[in-house]
Figure 1 (cartoon, rainbow, N blue to C red):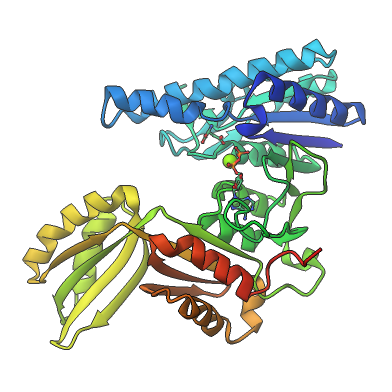
Figure 2: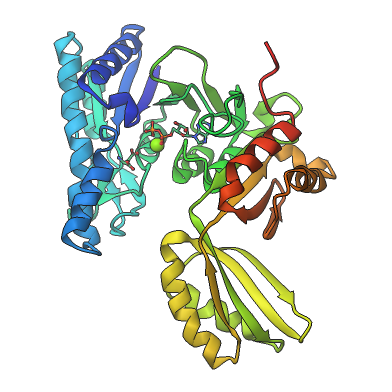
Length: 407
Ligand code: ADP
Ligand code: ASP
Ligand code: MG
């Protein structure tokens, strides 16, 4: 079999850990498999490099950021190859550019366009383990690019798709995908399986266990994707298509949450046609992504238009809207960044009524005020005050019976 394994930052966080990864890789190879390994930078390295850049410049050039951040992964591919060689397992390391993982030129958020397989195939055929730097690629002009935070997951899935690997295994510091972040809810339960669609929603709504792009890729190219622990053996979680999921799907599979959003309101907007466009036109022109949108009519016949954006974009969005508000005769702009979004995700929601009311009931019991609500076919999200986030997640986790059965 051809297996692509990816090891995240904590899994390669020290020389000891790198040795342990080498053992795991060598064991997989000894079972007769061809192995391609993708590694992240050692934990903390990408953050440290970013902090150093910001000591020099407030907004460093994206091209130089990519040049800098890609060094983290370059370190670990060399160390892992050495560790493999030292235990008698032939290995060869490659940067993204050396494989030729061709991307567009959107520095710091590049997208993979094409992957050359030639070098990897040659090495695999010669019995070598191929060790590839995650998170990075190269554009047509030869500039180093990176794929966005958490991007090594995407490198691994993209390589698995290109090589038609039998499985792509994401090794991390938890032993699978849980009903919610196990760091927040102690009795969260590991899922044996989750559908691509649910995993995509979980990732998009804040569960950073897999990068969103990697799940998209896996769904599109039908890559068999599994999340496992690099610290202990176990089956992990398999990401499957809905027809493959076999059992009747649970109504709710998981709870995702994020603190990364801020809420912006344009208040006292005259109730005439074209106002929403006046608000969101310039926001979209500034390339700011908008998430939840709510408009409500006030008693005085004006509207409040409220929406959320990523916290990092809140200042820019409110700057833009200050002048827009003046122009259209609105009362003003309010920004609230101590908010959080909690979402219930499950494909079973399609065929079940009453999920929203159970959610609201659970939050009401904890006296948690809901500021915004948004739903789609397989998710319901609410925006609440950030300080209640963990309480809300725990309350919902237990209200929907997601915890481990008592031992
Ligand atoms: P890596 O460095 O291996 O890529 P990440 O930190 O990116 O690891 O992802 C693993 C982390 O994702 C876990 O430590 C866990 O805290 C977090 N996480 C968030 N939501 C979930 C979830 N539903 N299931 C499992 N882990 C989750
Ligand atoms: N090292 C990069 C990051 O910390 C990529 C990754 O770990 O997937 O975001
Ligand atoms: Mg990650």
